Each structure stands twice: as structure tokens, then as C-alpha cells.
Figure (cartoon, helix red, strand yellow):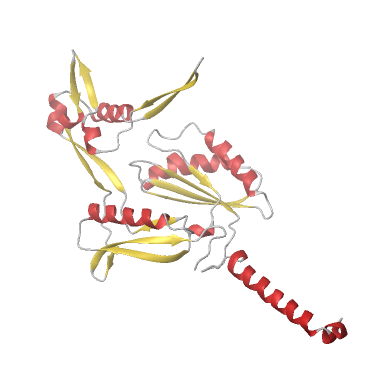
Length: 290
């Protein structure tokens, strides 16, 4: 072979050019460029919100029932739980070599079978974590002398613009406080209407919900029946009826002050001395970091 190439130098040159072209094609189009190497987490991540719950409430109402439900489940090596105000998080480590997809379905089945969760809890988020959600390729700072509401709106617009760029499919916002609807009852107004806090809470819970009611089969097809009553803004909460009697309604706005803002606590994020939010651009799948 060596002697043949020595006598046919043109063929050897063509082979060298072919190898170089194949290498360039592979480098640019087949090998994704990464900022950090992808990692596989042999774990299942579970997160569940508990509206208004303290850390102790989260432990008693969420963490302990889930740990009891998962006890004895095949494929689980260790469960690490973290409970704090308003949310519980669990990392369920799998046995080495165990199929995570099978374990994920088994965990969902066990958790869905729990009937003792408090009414204030939301549906749990259960997924196999991906390292692309942990390491950003770059950060874009959105900064200016403006209020938190306006800054968030501008950052959302930047986030949407970034997602329209080819090659970017995952963008996250960091530094913002979560939106929160706060209802502050007026004790005097509650007493004048003879309404207790329990009745007030029940009315808000009952009137702010999206409820599926099945489907109806007809000649024209299947019709989905659903009650859409979830309130999202201050104006929608203000119109919630707390009590209806003798043709008159007592609205939430008459006995309480509804504040549409951010969750309690102070979070200060600045860039060059101005308030800022950061847009984190992630790399997923075969996307190129460059």
C-alpha cells in the first residue's frame, strides 16, 4: 500500500484532501461545540408548590407523604428532600444501571396515588433533570433605571427576541422575583358582613379554578366541557363573589385589598449600578455554543 501511494502521488493528494474535508465537515456540522460537557444525572427531580405553607407545613404535608409512598420502590438508591416556605424539592437517586424512564413512571404512579396532599398544593413537577438547564452559554444583562414591573416587561421582550434566533431553543430569566397576588382582608368589613376568614378563603379557592368536566360525543364530533374561572390579575380577583344572598353579592374587593405585585422579601440585582435582570442562553441537544 505504501509503495502504491509512493508511485501514485496524485491519488495520495486526493486522499489527503478528502480526509481534510471530512474532518472540517465533522467539526462544523456533526460535533456540537459545548461550553461545559453534558452530564447525565442518575436521578429523578420532583418539585411541588404549597401556596402559603411554612417549611414545617411543607414537610408534614408533602415530603413525609411522598417519602412514605416511595418506600420500597425498586430502583431507588437514596432520596434527598428539601422543604422550605412554599415549595418542596426531592432528588431521587436511582440504582446504578436502572432505567430512569421506568423509575419516572413508577414514581409518578406512586405520587398520583397520594390523596392526603393539602388543598393549597399544586400538581407536582416530576422529570429527569438535564444538565443543559444548569450551565448557560452566555448571559445578557437587561438594565436601566426603571421599576421592577417595567424591567420585567423589557426582559420578557428580550427573551422572546432571543428565542427567535436560529439555534437557540432554551432561554431562562434570572434575578427576578416571582409574581404574587396578595389578599389583605379588612377585619371591620368582615365583621360587618359576618364573614369569617375560612369562608373568605373557601370562596377564593372555589371561584378561582379551571375545572375540566369531561366531553360530550355528538354527530359533529367531540365537545370538551371545561369551566374556565382561574383568576390571574387584581381586577379578576376583585370581582370574585364571596357571598350571594337575596340577589345581592358581596365581592372580594368590598372586604379585602388585593395587591398584584411580587412575592415578599427583597432581591437586589444590579449591573453597573442600575437595576438589572439577566437572560441566560442555554445550549440543548446538538445546538452549537458558538
